[in-house]
Image 1 (cartoon, helix red, strand yellow):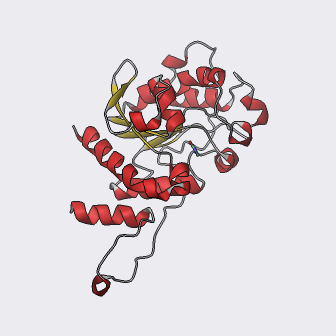
Image 2 (tube, protein in one colour):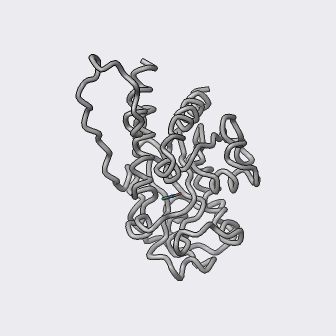
Image 3 (cartoon, helix red, strand yellow):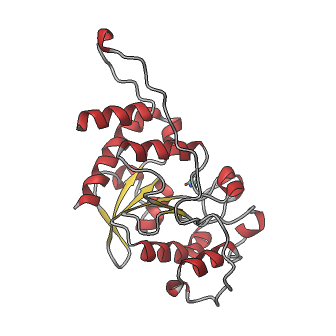
Length: 241
Ligand code: URA
């Protein structure tokens, strides 16, 4: 079973496995799930009144989403098309946290819907999950111009939103994808190579957290996909504990 799952993962991620010629079958068509708004319908803006600043940690889902979508706390609101809140199951066991929306996400209002998102979907499939089953969010809710790295003051303004999302979802595991997400969630400057391969904890609740490569990096460096598979297996083990 583990072998079969490994094969599916490697195939989904475009890693060629060496096989004896006489055993090589026709490759199965690779299916990538179309992006969707998730079971909770997170894509639609809420009509709730926006509460005063300072009580983000008490907001419920609709009010939190409304607050994010109308946020002007940092300058990123000036260049965004729209804020990207988060998507997926609000009682998910797994929460996936990325860096910030890219161009496609900014346009569509949903995290991880570009090429990197398609690879993320494949990675999730390989461990038996799909987008509806997890909750996906970013450290920053608005796209930095030209996809530059988030600035500390932007992260600081946005942090209460993600903290509240984590508190509401109460996941069994946070998978931090990429250096920026990992460093900001764990409040460290350590390189990704040192953060991978072990269980961390996030926030006061001590939510288990595992770090892996960003799918955009894996698209550029496909040889690292094998290490990402190790990370996913660790994440699965930690989530199952
Ligand atoms: N990269 C991220 O980190 N998040 C997205 O939503 C898209 C690309």
